[in-house]
Length: 79
Image (cartoon, rainbow, N blue to C red; front, side):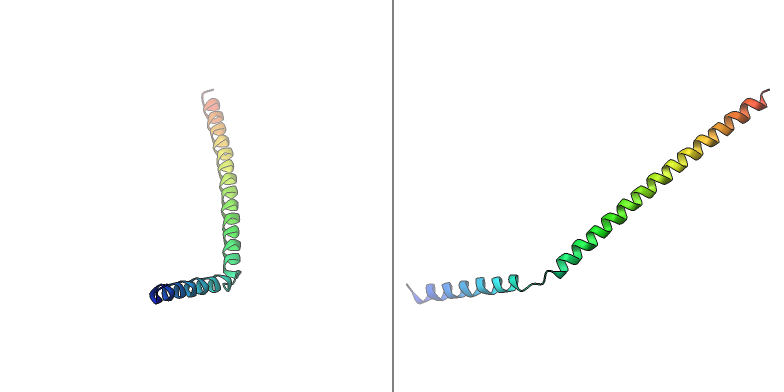
């Protein structure tokens, strides 16, 4: 074994060790906070979709009522 090869092996081992320590010492809180924020955003989107569905149903009911009123007005004005 040459000294260059041994030196390269030591540097690679130190790099792997440093990466391992860096990965193990990271706190899990940011990932948990991101997951919580993501879940909250999904709930907000779900609530917005439900509100939009309710608004569409209300608009449909109002349109049907307006059409019925217009039909009644047309029928009574012709008599």
